[in-house]
Image (tube, rainbow, N blue to C red; front, side, top):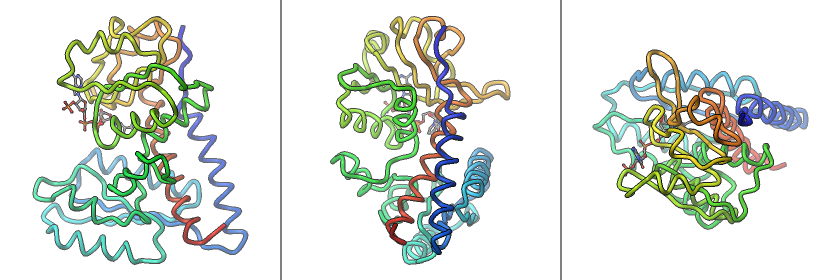
Length: 283
Ligand code: NDP
């Protein structure tokens, strides 16, 4: 029976440590850190994610502001708002909740966020620094995965890691971050020929494709470690990209969905905000 890698417990541990660090800064006479989240429209999933972020911020002592724009907001109004936030000394970090409505160019919006305010770690300069292994800010999900592996004492050095999915927010950055940690990484995607033969070679398999229970028992090697990023809703219930029930007897460790990578992503966001805050207020 596999070890269940508990993201909820791990995130709580690191959120509590962060709460103490923020408290200490405030006791020294500093202001509280502040995160702003911009939402465009009223996408139900986005609203849920934002509520979770708000609750998490409030729990650790990060001020939270939620700015909502109509779906019809123009790109230039949005860019003006981003410019204001870039220059607002009271804001340590902000993010624009994705996905955006079709009339708004996502690249343009993300490019407009100053790296010194990049709470999500998605802007090109941040990602460039991640590639160069000199960033203090990281995209939340990859940062959370690495923290989880670390917490469970899973050394990635020299390990064969297979990442399925090559998105800019999960697949690509995690493959680069693990390469920087001396893993041997293979990235797979929808055009990969014979995916199964690749995934079956993995000591550590990371799946981020957005396809419910896609990875079955025959896609994994005996004793592998499985990190399931997928968040899918089937019949009103959340499940991952990995078929947990069929895989769990064969592998040595696996993240559940929910309660695996998700809580770690939020913890990473909070840590990014605190890092940006410390760069502003000092230690
Ligand atoms: P994207 O939709 O941006 O990218 C999906 C990737 O998976 C693409 O690279 C695509 O390949 C690849 N892919 C899709 N189907 C297959 C397949 N059958 N075989 C191989 N590769 C495939 O995904 P995201 O990275 O944004 O999200 C992935 C999942 O993770 C979603 O369920 C999302 O909800 C979840 N997620 C969860 C988070 C958390 O905190 N738990 C955070 C972020 C995402 P190609 O490039 O060729 O199209």
